[in-house]
Length: 324
Ligand code: DP6
Image (tube, rainbow, N blue to C red; front, side, top):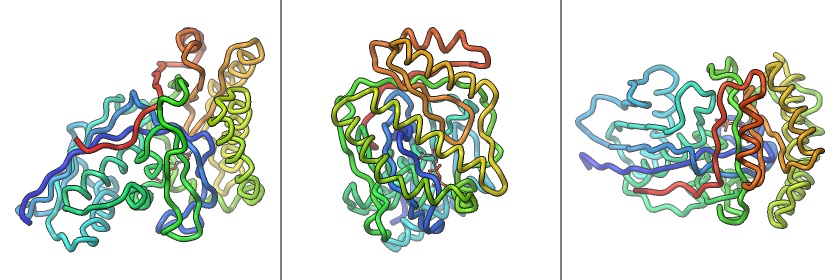
């Protein structure tokens, strides 16, 4: 093969039950299963071209040529895919996202989901969705959950083979909206990969992991029954557990800003006064305010007025990764 190209579109996802800590960092076997919702209004489009005339892999992200750690991580993932089929050609990867760079949202989930699906096709490999999720997982754990459609569970599994993701409900199942309150748009100092690596240093991680199956079941049931109150309670607990682990790891990671905690308290108060809203926060200070679609305009209006909130981005549930 001298030249072969494919393009894929993927969405990032917001975790309701979060992945934090691996049993095996090398192949990303997580300590607990996780559940998320794809964010259909945020999109990453990636074209991969294997071209034997290139001197080495090349990566362009939103029009900017990358080197260093970003290129290395992508090359490592491409090597896995090249290894499946004995492809030796370097690749040119062009990737663009419709969510502005520097919103703190730049997601490895949509990046590695789109990269995996495009590169597998460009390498001429046939793969099931399940195997694509296992492969995407090796690039970035949360990317496994951006391959299937809608609401997705990534099963912990005891081996590489058993640790995969699958849809538990289609995007149309529940009209939720993620109203993302941007509090800090700078790159976070410590990324998730480092957070996973040190999670075991928290004396509380074992208790968090031990309780994970219960939280997963509660969340799965809440999604199935479209029970917003049950969802609200379990996602806020799960988010607080993750941040408790981060804050009690060594070295301690403090992702929240003062405006983050102010907003968390506001969201709980809004819910108590009858608005169907709940918060969840990933490894950063931005607050994902989940609500039912009828409340979305009101929630956005309230969020914009909140001190410390720079911008609000809305997204409905989205489909899985597709080839175009
Ligand atoms: C807090 O998937 O970004 O968003 O596997 O090292 O790429 P790597 O980590 P990543 O971790 C995501 C952590 C999280 C929770 C979640 O999405 O489940």
